Amino acid sequence: MTQLSEYLSNQSGDAAPVQHDGPYINCNDLFKIYKRADLEVVALRGLDLTVEPGELIAIIGASGSGKSTLLNILAGLDRPSAGQVMVGSRDLLDVSDNDLVMYRRSEVGFVWQATARNLVPYLTVADNIELPMALTGQPAKARRAWSSELLESLGIADKAKRLPYELSGGEQQRAAIAVGLANKPPLLLADEPTGELDTENADSIFEMIRGLNRAYGVTVVTVTHYAGVSQFVDRVVHIRDGRIGLETFTRPDYRHDGDTVEDEYVVVDQSGRLQLPIELANRFRSGGLAKIQVEEGQIVIDPPSTNPRQTRSRR
Image (cartoon, rainbow, N blue to C red):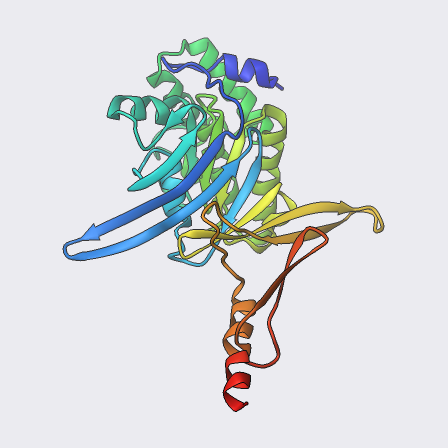
């Protein structure tokens, strides 16, 4: 397969490969407010998130939590209302319309949940993959070579001449991933890529995404409700009410061959705000004030068994 250096150096279009130090994605105190007449809806409320180059993360959360809004901002499909969002060296809060077009064309690939939004129905799979490259002026020989390599990597080389309706749901999503990587972007975004697939096909798609991430070094951010996603990604980010509340890391468990252990962490953002899991928050509502202490460098939150206010009032 193509190595990362060749992958990035062969990017097409006028945009050069992004050179930067530190995190590839850096969201700092990010806000997004939608206005409908006299009504304001706050989709993101001070969100902080960093993603390292080549990292593969999944964002999960309830409907309306802001995860799709975040993905649309990272894709350049929507503009934030306030805060900072850096992708590479590009500030998506302060970018011209022309630069945003070049960003969407050459620096980010997007995979939608509905396959009808990913593939042109009257073009073959190979033509769908080559179309973004043709729009950036790549020669036909280079388009065919990269299209063939992507199809081979995704295990659907024999489907190159088929139309989208002749493919299964899983094959359509693989073709959609290939389209997203057509212009060799350093960032791939996927919005519910397995939402319309069964468990077997969902596992296969995430396995493919992880393989591409490892082979080409592309940074991947995916939004999903799929419960089994943690085994395929480096980190699971839990978003609630427009802010990051929890992060889950999966690590090998050498005591049990082949097993993994998930470590879950509560996130304190740069403003010192803390979002608690619902189960723990409910204990506070019934128990009263929380006791917070530091033990061996870790923050420990201990809900009391009785309400201190009630205890004082009885004395």
